Each structure stands twice: as C-alpha cells, then as structure tokens.
Image (cartoon, rainbow, N blue to C red; front, side):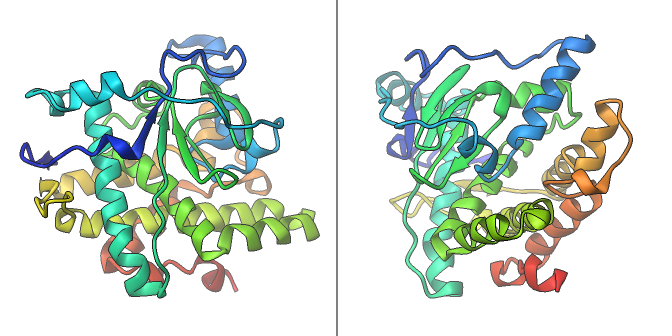
Length: 303
C-alpha cells in the first residue's frame, strides 16, 4: 500500500482533541500482556470494538460539545514528512474513504453523501452519544455523526489481537464510515428501532449491521485507488493483494469467536455482536470482490 506524496491531506475532516483532557478521566488502553491486559481487551471488545455506536450510546449521556484544535495537525500534515506521521496517514485514509462515498452513495443509492468528521482523542472523549474512553475502541456516534478513535488502538490491534498489517488502519476507519453510511440510509435507525421492539433479536441484528459495515469497507477497498484529493490527485498509488489479505486477517482477528477464544472463554454464538471471523472475512470479501455496496445486503441474505 502506497500513498501518493503529492496528494493533499485535508485536515478539515478531522477534529483533533488530543491533549484537550477529554470529558471525564479515562482508562488507558492496556497494551501489555497478562491478566490485566486480557480484562481490558474483553471490556473494549464487548462494549463496541470497531462498532456502530450502540455500546457507547448506552453508557451515559453527553453533550458532545468538546472542541478540537487542529493547529498542530495542520502543521505536521503540511510538512515534507507528513506521510511518515501516523495521524497524517490516517487523515489521508479518511479523505479517501469520504471521497469514495461522495461518489458511490448517489451512484448506487441515489442519496447525497454528507461528510462526517473523525475525532482523534486520547484516553477519554465526550461525544454526542455520551462519555467514552479508549477502552471502548473506535466507534461511530449517530447522534453527532462523527467517528471517534484513539490512534493507540492500532497498537492493541497489532500486539493483542494479532493484526499488525498497516491496512488494518484504513479497514477500521472504512468500517466506521460504513456505519455513517448506514445512518445516512436509515439502516441504523431501523435496526435500532427493531432492537428495541425485539430485544431477543438485538445481538443478531447487531451482527448483521456490523457485517454490512465490513462489506462497505470492502467496497471502498476495491475502489480506493480511484479516489482523489480536492485537486483530482490520486490518494493511493498502489493497493496490493497483500494489503487486502491484511484486511482479511484483521477481520478474522476481531471476529467474535476469535475474541472469545483470546479471552479464555468458550465460543458462544448467542453472545456474538459483530460476527464470526469467517463471516467478517466473507462480507469484507464480498464488498471487495464486486466493489458494489448494493451487494452488501446482509439483512436480505439472512432472510
């Protein structure tokens, strides 16, 4: 995977809240091994690991009024070594994902795309869905239409979950933007309403929502090399099969069954909220194979 040095990094799509103190005191993501690390791992996976915001929105109330300061980010991302910086590379991933959906949503769903900011934070953050800390993992909040991520999550993904490839990073972001697309299309609200009406179906519906977001991530991946900045300069110069394999490896690493095994428990499908490793790979692969997000109807497939 190679990003284009000539592509312009649009930091206006980011709210950088790192160092701002974030809402309430947070619990740092556990990076080391041992029992404490596993407990933290289970907590953030069960709450909302690369999830849709359901877990976070049910924690506490929040006003989401905390402000970011992009000054330092803008300076780093305008420098000659910008693509060597984790935050600048992730900003460019966000630019690519949103450039794709700006074209794909009206083309495939006859709906205009509305941009969503990604919030970079450290340890804790106040969102429209309430207070959250890094232990919750990345999430999308449908109440303020923003994606939230502590970039140190990628260390957890590499060191604890076994997904060290760099393509894991845009995969995670593309999955979260998949939830934003679901929100724009009304899918998120329909699922939320159905979960409330049929509590016994809540986990199954959550799985279908998550698998669809995986599929949308795959559709972006197929089209990533065609995305461009605001001047028409391509964002990616290359995306290889090895990168896609890293995406599939990431999908496998964060499957519910893989997480349950890592936490030392038995595999219990009734507790799945995001889908098995095989299903997450399958639906990411479905989106990637066709590049058509209309092929991502996990709900129809379940019926």
